Each structure stands twice: as C-alpha cells, then as structure tokens.
Length: 579
Image (cartoon, rainbow, N blue to C red; front, side):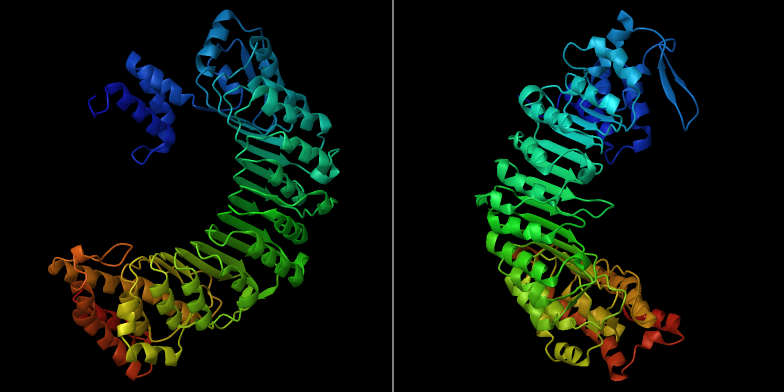
C-alpha cells in the first residue's frame, strides 16, 4: 500500500483539526467553516457534518434545524421558554435522525425544556443519539431527570451526572442499573452532589451503587462524603479516583472503617480536595495497599486538623504506597500550620521515582542546604520541585545558592524549580568563587523555569546572574509573585530576569554560533555536539567576561546597577558583552 494519505483521509483530518481548534485554525470561525465545507461537495459533506455535530449542547439545538412553525423561543433573555407548536412530521423526524446519528458528545444544562424531550420521546424506540460516547447530564430539574434514559446508548463511555439535594434512593437505584442494563462499556463516571448530607441518601446506598460499576477506570465524586474512598477497594479495575468538596466544608459521615477488610487496589491516581477528614483518609491508607499509585494530590485545611493527624496520614502513606511507583506528589494546605522538613518531606524521601513534587503550604521550617542536598540524592528523577509559602508573614529563606548546585548535579532532568533563596549569603558566594569547577561539574541543561518565590533575597545581581547563567545555560524564565520581602530585593530579581540573563543568553548564543556550536537542550552534551569544547568555552571566553563584572561589584560590596544612573550602567553592561 502506498504510504501517502488518500484524499478522503486528508479531508477527514482537516475537518477534525477544525473541530478540535488546531494550531492552524482560529476557534471562532471553526463552526461556520465546517458548515460551509458541508455545502461544498459530496466528498466534503459527510466528514464536515460529522465534525460539526460531534459535540452538541442542549436538546434545543436539534430543533433549530427544523421549520420555525414547529417551535418557538418565547420570553426575554432572563426567562426564556421553549414552546412546541405541533407534533413532529416525517420530514422533521428524518432531519433529526440525519444529525442525531453524528453526535458523540452531548451536554445538557441545568434546566432544559421538558417540552423538547416530550416531543422527541415518541421517536425513541431505543436511543435518541445512537452513537453517543460522552454524556454530561447537569440537569437540576427533577421532572426532566428521568429523560436521561433516552440518551443511554450501548456506546457510551463517559457519564457525568448532577445529583440534586432532592434526590432519592430511586435515583441511585437507577444509576445502579446503567452499567448492567444500558451501558456496559462506561469507563468514566462523574457524580456531582448538590448537598449530600441533607438528602434522603445514605453512604451505604452510595457505596452499594458504586459497587455495581465494575468496569470503571476513572471515578470523580464532588460533594460526596470522604468515606466514599472505600469504594476504591470494590471496583477492581479503577485507575483514577478524585473526590472533592468545592465551596463548602464537608466532613466524614459516620461509617466505621472496621467494616472494611484489608485490601489491595490497582488505583494509580488519587486526588482528594478541600475540607476532608484527614483521620478517615489516614485510616483508608492504613487498610488499603496502594501498590500501584503513581499520582497523589492532597488538598486540606490544617486549621480543621491536628498536626498529629497529619503525621499519621504521612506515616500511613509511606507504609502503604510502593516506594518504586509514586511519581507525582502534590500537597496543598490553605490552613495556618507550620510544617517542618522532617514532618512533611522526610517521609517522602523513600519514594525514589518521584518526578514532580509540589508543596503549597503556609510555611516549611527547618529547610537548609543540607536538606536540599538530601532531596537531590533521594529523588534523582526529579523534573519539577516547587515549595511555595502562602503565609502572609515574610520569612527569611534558609536556603542559599549552594542548594542550586546540589539540585543541578543531582537532578539532571529538573526543568522547573520553585524555592525561596537567600542569595545575599556571603559565605556561599565566596565558596562558589573559590571553587568555580563545581559550577562546571554541576551544570544543568534542563532547567527552564526558576520561581524564586516571594521571600527570596538577593544582592550582587551581577554575580547571581553570572552564576545562574553558567549553572543553568537554558534558563529562560524567573517568574515572580507578590513581593513580601523588601521591594529592593524584588526589583533586583526583576533586573536579573529581564536585563542581565537575556544579555548573557544572547551573548552565549552569538559567540557559540561563531564557533559552530549550540547549547544542548534538556540533557548534558553528547560527544557529537562538542562535549569537551562547550564547557571549556563557557569557562573561558564567556565566563571570564561575566566574572569580571561580578568581581568588580563584589569588590565594592554593592550592586552597581542599583545606583541612580542605572540606565547608563546597563548600557555599560551591554557594551561589555557586545550588545
């Protein structure tokens, strides 16, 4: 067979790109473009219509393709009413079937017109949308809820349902029958509870309902009790589980964990968000062997918990999760507790395969250069490491530039780093100046983003810029959040990011290009691109010039670009680098 694409395949790919809003198409014109292509020729008509009707929002959309004597939208923008004036004719039915068979994704809003479903109900011996694969049923109207039956076709793979506070056991009973009677291939289920504690539903009812979904690979629950975690052990093939409580405090409903035996789960991704009972989560981790967990996201409010409970959670996690599978750990606390390095980080050091670690907490005390060195040696595969303090009180950083050397050499794949740094520490600068070979040996070509956090301090900008440019040749961004430290420090980091580093970067590129070389992207140099020549060049021609300016500022123990004639000094710097 010829390896090139055929004309129908090219047409199909063009239409799919238009639907998906690909990089070569403007999203605002995609629908009108597909509609125009559908009227162009028979060859374009079918693929264009398939993609134009791939995703539909609201049942009224189908009626907009029918004669205006059939339907009417009455009322103003705030109170619209959908009115059906007559029964559907044979022509209307054919029009509906022409487009309904193309729909793969259907979203229904909170209060859809019941008259539209009543008009379509006689047409439905089986299913309204026979090829539907994803259904988002956000219906709040109890009178319309039962019409979901018209959309439950055998091809459905993903289902999202809103459960109102007036829901009854019959609703959950209906849900129990979906995987066995209507849709055996559903692998993704999302349930949104308006207010679970005040419904007539019990936790046992919910767990019994979820146990019927044996083929699920992903389960999202919003507003359900945190005890629903126990359903993980009842669904054998579940890979991803998310439970959250948006916008309100939600605790644990009474359910003794003693009713659940020790079990092992194949779950890979767990996300627990908002105000949950950490005691319940810790009990779950102690009873369920999570040997396959790769991603773990925890969001809590420590003001509702005790530090002893949080320590119990981390201890249970370290005991029950495999040390060789966990790759992503995200911990967020919007409370007021201060954590220590030994409490929060040390229990995680055994997970040697961690690639992304994010700690968004009020404050982490006890962090030092030695601690960062321990992190670098324990997590050699680290790609992203972010520690962000949300405390409104500024804390002086206890980590110096020495920590950057440890991370650069110990984590060669690190591309994102967020850390509060004290770059004013004199001993660290002297150590780096006395042993420049450490920068050469630790050079990291992967780091692109260095978020210096909101408490980071800096002096001798020229030295810091030269150090960062030498250690991280591909560094392109130093984002800054709201400055809680001195405005002078904030301005200095901004100067390093927006003036000094771009000058150094362009100088490197220009001088390397003159030698026929280029900086490696994302990994240490290989023999094929000058493994020996490139570091030698950075340490002589370029390094000598950058260190010359840094030494001048260091000798006077000041930042010469902080002076009132800073613009003239910036021009002097550009001239020194041939800008």
